[in-house]
Image (tube, rainbow, N blue to C red):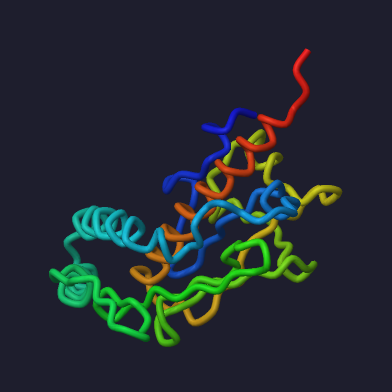
Length: 201
């Protein structure tokens, strides 16, 4: 499958309440060399900007019921007010209440991304416990694309993060968007390097 068809899109990664899945392509896991792609913290600004745009669209789509009006008001007041990225010396960068917090493995792969202890995190280690069944309610992938993301030798498993302390849709949306942008960039590097090392006839 061509690279542009493998990259993940927001419409393919559905959030239900605060739950979602972002599959990690097997080639990223199998890549043994140090990554040139910057770690996930470098994509935080891009993720926040995409998140605000999608969150505004979400609030506009809410039905005009009392419950949904209350949700819209809460999101607008809590998350859509103008904020600035703040980075003080020896402190984690912040955007509003959210932190830009990541951890990397020896290859430079960001297996942990967090927007703060009270707002949610995603974490991944290359062990069997991070294999999961791909739930159709969260993944709107074609059969062909889903097959590309399956764990090698496992017919019904994908690599994916574990979620921690993600309680509300806005936080879930930011973490999903951040992970998607980062993983797409890593996959682009790994895929391109693999293509360049293929023997030519």
